[in-house]
Length: 276
Image 1 (cartoon, rainbow, N blue to C red):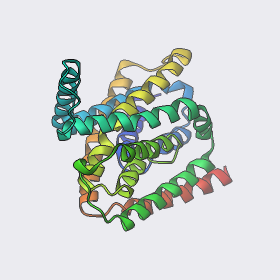
Image 2 (image 1 turned 45 degrees about the vertical axis):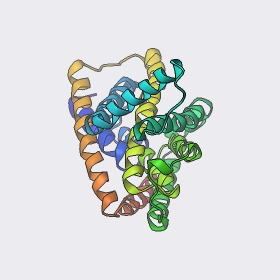
Image 3 (image 1 turned 120 degrees about the horizontal axis):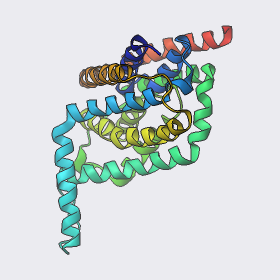
């Protein structure tokens, strides 16, 4: 593992974690092209996830601080006997993030081993990328409603959380799946985008903890502080760029552009898997 490899993997992770093109699929394919054994970079992958997590905090720190503040106040009011008051938008958003995280977490715990076995199949990654493109195209074309956080129900959050859970499959984009789920639920584009990024926080933390168990088994390999730092910084900067880019694409109703990319890459990966 070299600094250059770490930077390349960091950029790929940062861009593809938030652009709806599947970070897991791209990372798995990149590791294959770079001839980097998966067990040698597990710790680096964990750190790259931390870098992208910092990206979300950097872009949405105001919303995150308000959500944490209002959620804590709501819990305190419950203990003080003032009842459960979730009328505040940030309180409700905090609750919905928790609700959406439950099905995602359950799918990760009970189905994680099954989905993890797909990482060694380039054919499955290629097919999943094509599925991602179809989902993006469909959601963009049929989206009509403009519901906001006040109109959001717990079942909406559960369904979006399930969409996020399916993104455990390499080649299925987490951001793409959650935005598609949100649009299908009729959320307005701003809420769909924000909710997708905010529920990524517990999802990325959960994935990081699961991967950390493997790190304890395989160790950190030949990674140095310089390699780790280069990977984290590159994933953070690429993540910030990707978040802002995706927000602009959604505002301009150009989300389906990513369908062309995932279809192309998907077919190329399938051809590569057949020929290799």
